Structure formats: C-alpha cells, structure tokens
Length: 273
Image 1 (spheres, rainbow, N blue to C red):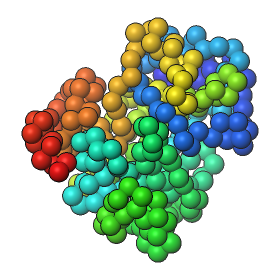
Image 2 (cartoon, rainbow, N blue to C red; image 1 turned 180 degrees about the vertical axis):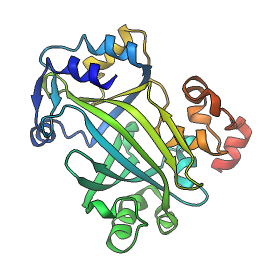
Image 3 (cartoon, helix red, strand yellow; image 1 turned 90 degrees about the vertical axis):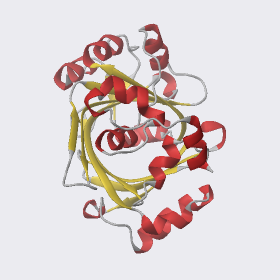
Image 4 (cartoon, rainbow, N blue to C red; image 1 turned 30 degrees about the vertical axis):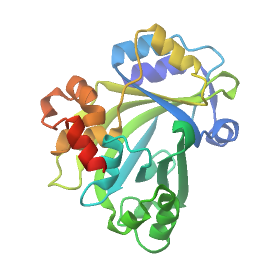
C-alpha cells in the first residue's frame, strides 16, 4: 500500500514542513475521519486536484509517527470521549520519526465542536515517560479549562502506537488531509498486547466549517465519516471497555475484538452523571 500510495502522490508538487505550517497550521479545526480499505483509498486519492501539495521531509513523502497516550487508572479520558461528554481531553506524546522531534500534546473540544490542540516541544527521550514537573504543570494548565485538571496527576502512559502518514495541503490552503497506514498499537496496561491493521487506511480532513475537496471526493466515492479514534478504538479492542462511540467501527474493522460492551442508554447516563 505505502509504495503504491507514495508513487501516486509523487505526481504532486511538494511542500516543506515550515511552509505547510505557515500556510495551514490547523491547530483549531473541524476534523472528519474516514476508515477504508487500501484499494478504495487509492482510487479516491488518484482524483486529487493537480494543485494539491504533499508534504516532503528529508526527500520522503511518507513520515513515520510514534505516539504514547496518557490516561488515568480509571480511564477517565477514554470514558469522557466514549460517552460523548461535551467537555473532554486527550493527552499524548508524539515523535515525528523523520525528524526526531517530539511534542507533548493536549487536545480539547472547543466551541461548536472545534478541536483545539496545544503542544509543547520536548526531548525525544521524554516522549512516553510519566508526566512530572514542568510537563505536568503545562498539561494541567491546558486541561483545567475542561474542568478535569484534578485528573492530571493520575495520568500515566497506557498505549503506544505507530503508523505511516502522508500529509496533503489542499488547494488555496483551504485545509489539510492526512492519510494514515501501517497502523499498530501496543498496550502499556498489560504485558504488551498488540493490535495491527496493515490494510486499514484512515483519512482525516482538517478544515474550517466548510468541507474540503477531499471530503467531497470521499463522499462521491460512497465513503462517509465514521467515529474512529486511534486511541479509543485500539483501547476498546484490547481491553474490556465500553466502546459506545466506536462500536460500529470496531465491529466492522476489528471484528475479532468485539468483546467491548455497548452500554445501554441508562448505563451511559448513569456513568455521565
């Protein structure tokens, strides 16, 4: 999949990381996610407009990512999202393997459903270690606006994931799209339970309120947005957790792991109370 995808994207003009961030940092955006098989993804991406640009770093249009996610022993961050609480947060450390740069990131849900991401640079050896000192204080300052700052001291690494990503800048700087492949996850709550999905492609569009050209191409190809989270779906697959928000995605793309219960409406309301 990756070789074919990279060959397809080689026809596009390239853009460097600094220029990409200047033209469309998209730290506050509307995200739409799509899960599809490799053949369908290639067919749709072959119709990209010629003036779309592809990110190139160190001569490569595909970059490796490694992420470590943090949660409490009671999985509060996971449950806030699974139960669709309006105020929620996610904390992760991410390393861009092409450059060796790492960031500590906090994602929160802003007004009108916008995703707001804040990040601070860290050393690569700090990615995935327990939060302490300045790092924990910074995370607390970003999470406390959701009302859950008191949970930060209990956060610990719970999941490690890797994947390959191609990043597109859409014509006129009207948003970005990412294409994730070679997805693997390893639980840090167990003895190293692993899940891999080499044939799954996740396309995520990042734009303002107006859907992007990639959204329209996907819709024309019969692909609709789905509820999927690399963190949430993997944790639901590997652990006995309520998978409400991602249950249908789990059944379709992770059928051998569908032991995660789907809560009743009454159970969801009780947990959200």
